[in-house]
Length: 201
Image 1 (tube, rainbow, N blue to C red):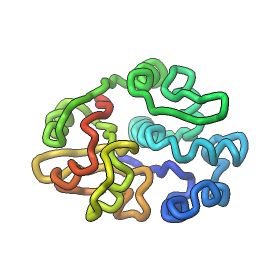
Image 2 (tube, rainbow, N blue to C red):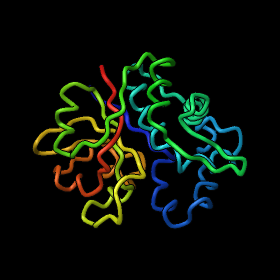
Image 3 (spheres, one colour):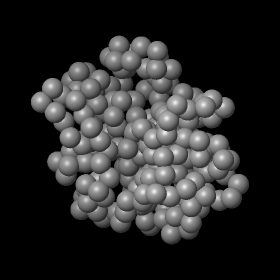
C-alpha cells in the first residue's frame, strides 16, 4: 500500500531555506495556512516541532485517505500531554506515552512505546507493526555525513529487513531524501537513538 508523503512544513521544498534562515524562511511559506495555524506566527512557532505529527498525518492519510491539518493534530495531541508549552511559548515533545494514548482514543490506532532497541531489531518490530516512528538525528537527510548525536527528529519507517530501512522523512530536502528513503541498516544506525513508537495494523 502506498503511503502518502507530507513534510512538516506546508511547502515541502522549504527545508534547505529553513536550515539556512530558520524562522524567517518559515514566515515566507506561502502555504502556511494549510497547516491549520490561526496565524503565521503560530505556524512559525510550531513548524520545527511537528515531525511526529507529520508522521501521524501520513499514517492517517494512508489509513483513511484524509490529510488532517498538522496543527490540528498538534493541538489535539497537546491536550493529551504529548507536547508541553511553557509560558514563554517554548514547545517540548513529542512525549511518547501521551501520544500513544492520543492516537488510541482519537483514531483507534493501537501503538506502543519502544525503547532500548538496536537498528537490527527494527525488522522484528516491523514484522508485528505496520509503522515505526523512529527517533533519529535530523542530519539523516545527508547519510554520508557523520551526525554529532542521535535522536531529535522523527521519521516514519515503512519497511525494514536485513538489507534496508525504508522511511518517509518529514524534513528531507528533496524527493530522494523525503519519500521512500532507503538506507542500509548500518547507515541508519548512525542516526538512530534506539527508541520510537510502533503503530499496529
